[in-house]
Amino acid sequence: MRKRAAVLCGAAVVVAGTVSAVPADASAPQVTRAAQVAKLSWKKCGTADYPTLQCASLGVPLDHAHPRGKQITLALSRVPHTAKKYQGPLLVNPGGPGGSGLTLAGFVASALPKAVAAQYDVIGFDPRGVGGSKPALNCSPGYFNPVRPDSVPSSSALEKANLKRAKSFAAACGKKYASVLPYINTISAVQDMDSIRQALGAQRINYFGYSYGTYLGAVYAKLFPHQVRRLVLDSIVDPTGVWYDDNLAQDYAFNDRHRALMAWIAKYDSTYKLGTDPEKIEAKWYAMRAALAKKPAGGKVGASELEDTFIPGGYYNGYWPYLAEAFSAYVNNKNADPLVEAYENFAAVDAAGDNGYSVYTSVQCRDASWPRDWRQWQKDNWAVYEKAPFMAWNNAWYNAPCAFWPTSSLKPVNVANGKLPPALLFQATNDAATPYHGGATVHRLLAHSSLVVEQGGGNHGITLSGNACLDKYLAKYLTDGTVPRGGGQADAVCPTLPDPKPLTSKAASTSSHGSTLHGLLGFHG
Image 1: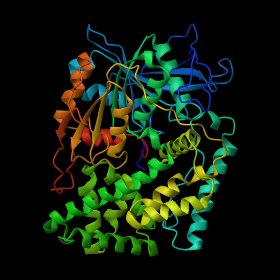
Image 2 (image 1 turned 90 degrees about the vertical axis):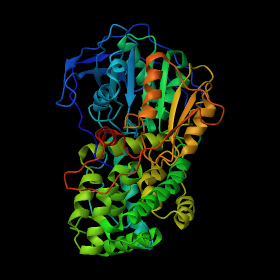
Image 3 (image 1 turned 180 degrees about the vertical axis):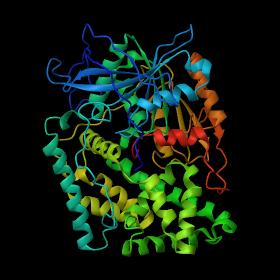
Image 4 (image 1 turned 90 degrees about the horizontal axis):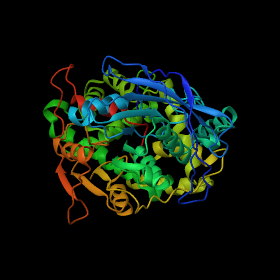
């Protein structure tokens, strides 16, 4: 639940050709394409970090079954190719759902080897409902304002308070966006992507997605297999568990990653003074949680906010030194200021975050069925909590609006695909947000795909983050389509990068590419 990347400005709107309706219960929906589309009008919108960025807007139908009906607007960004050899557009997506991809285009173009990036138009986009796209959803501004009820429903009063919040959020979305919500889903976003392809004048696209962006890419490849030239998926969603089961699986993985943080702190007792026994350090963390439930730090960080603050450590170990310092200061010095600062840096949700969460729930609640009987949620989440307490109930309440969502559910797309050119997949063995099983599953489902594994890695989003071994395979694939081939489940294995060291000064920072990427990756998954 981190802050969103800033949204770039859009330019003039053009209306693209559209695709026909997708049956709600189809595993491989049939689509047709319009014969003619408008061209995009690109305007300069560079930033200090990415000065060559350009922006445009694209009009698409709200409902692709009615191409002449109500139009919505997608915000696009581009870093144009500069090489004589042109390999077409490379669409990039940071995940979420709800993540803005506008700035990601600039990052990818700058992080790839110059000779590789120069061969592509790197295209970012805000999916429908997100950021610079219109309408941009914001169902309940300030929904995550502190201090929220304790996520663990240890009393009837706490459970009722959290249920009231979930129901009110679902109701607010339904009231505010009744005509829009049925069309905020992965299939509609994929149809928008093909409208982008047509507006770019490309017969085929290259695609590079992180996290939820891997599911978005796999669904696009299923619906439009002959429009895919190259496909890169990094930190891969298990498409067989969308979304209720995938979220339960996350809970176990995040608990393991939280314990990895405790073990890392134990290695540096001379710095953090929290002890050398990871289990005892973990007990101190839960004692801190109990204390904050009674007296929130700075009037902002209660038990739920503490979880929010430490969950990003499950995405990226570059945050560990900062979290450890805040933990140590609170326990050893009774100083809550670093903890409040960590909350504000890693967990506080701004307006863009409200937008991201609104799209996250809208997509996930519409994409697939969720239990509508709260007793099922109670049973499943208490069972998880007994074994993996760190994020179990926090994650449950994050997704709980889906139990009360005002739209019906679609059937998830079966992404199994034998019609694609070789795809390149990247997966860390200890990824918490998208556990390893997802990468192995998609490798099995996508014929001709190649899986590159980061052995021992636990970060989420592993390419373009400083691991030269991984990036070598990415660059080779984007250069000439070559993928590694091996005899086991993984086609290639790369060692993970070393864990971070404690900070040596306040000015210390994580690796530039790693920290930049993880600031851009999408919301929650």
